[in-house]
Length: 64
Image (cartoon, rainbow, N blue to C red; front, side, top):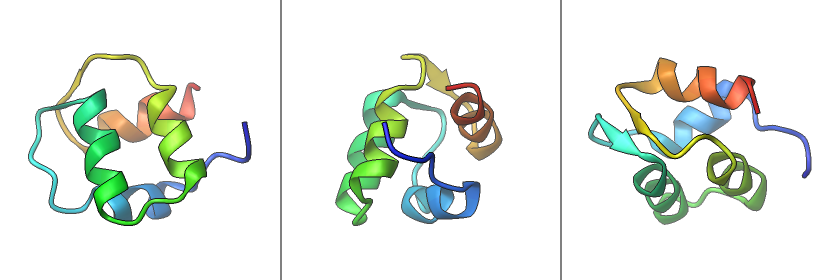
């Protein structure tokens, strides 16, 4: 996998998503908001669970 996106870049593509959201929801939202392959592959690699907000997503990404 390429470099992980920084948290600001990641959240830019997740802006406006309604939480709680699952991994598939995050990936689809980011894809529809122009996320590049690095962002999408990073989101696809986080655990498949429900995330209650942007901090939870950022934490999961940091552990990938």
